Amino acid sequence: MGLMDFIKKQFIDILEWTESQDGVIAWRFPMAQNEIQYGASLTVRESQMAVFVNEGKVADVFGPGMYKLTTQTLPVLTYLKNWDKLFESPFKSDLYFFSTRQQIDQRWGTQQPVTIRDKDFGAVRLRAFGNYAYRVVDPKKFHTEISGTRDTYTVADLDGQLRGLMLQHISDAVARSGIPFLDLAANQIEFAKQIREATGPSFDAIGLKLEGVTVQNVSLPEELQKILDQKIGMGMVGNDMGKFMQYQTAQAMPELAKGAASGDGGGMAGSAMGLGAGVALGQVMAQNLAAGLQSSQAQGAAAAQPAAIRPDEVMATLEKLADLKAKGILTEDEFAAKKAELLKKLV
Image (tube, rainbow, N blue to C red; front, side, top):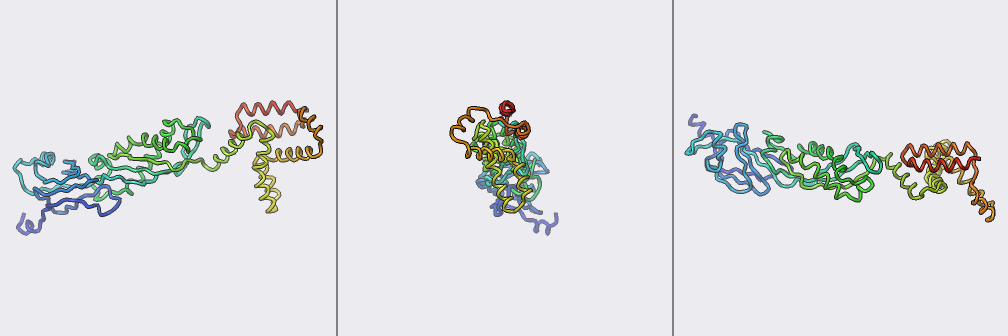
């Protein structure tokens, strides 16, 4: 080395990272053509770790504290460089700092519904979202598997991969929890715990620790939510066919009123049929008219005898019930019971 080159070369005697930029997980100390002075001071603050990398290999890892860099404090680096124990000249090596504080308020969520097995419904497509927090616990593994030789590696760089890991294990978490879908909303803490336990090993494999998971919402896609609402409504009225018809009619009334206000007669009829209320509406209106004309004695007599209806009405009602069974609103047993009841009323 020429005299001028020696004069221009600078020796670094203080190595530290103040984390002036938010969201940085890994940061390489800028060396350029500089070399580290033998006996230089290394400061690793709380919530940090430092890693020396020599010739592509991780040499030493330092936790929080202040260190004087000598052959005693860098034994592995000394071995890699084949230094003599009395060698005391400047040396060149890559130094990376890692932030080990928690990276909080990271978001996860299902962009598309996730299909899971469910005790009550067999299979359900659900949506869910929440937050999670993590930290670097093994900088050597994280450097080797993820950050590599980049000058900086940020939370944003890692976001997509970690959210993918979270979503990948949702089905496992539901299965491990054993909680039916209808109870997930009331057991979000347990659901979050199962997500954390199912996903934790994937974080460990890249040098991270999944510190916490929260579940803020669990829901069904809109079309499945409508079917669930109908099933809940049927559960409220029980096996009484008359009450069920009234329930269906009540569901249809807002659409009918909307159609009437717009003057769309075809729309009204279509809405009524689409909601399975066409037959129900006619039956309920006929029953109400009959009730107004009959005396209390006649009503008692009629109540003692099964009502007779025409075969075409029976077939129409059976078709409606079969459609509800196909959608999962009626069970096989409920459908069979209603079918038997209707067949008895044939004239």
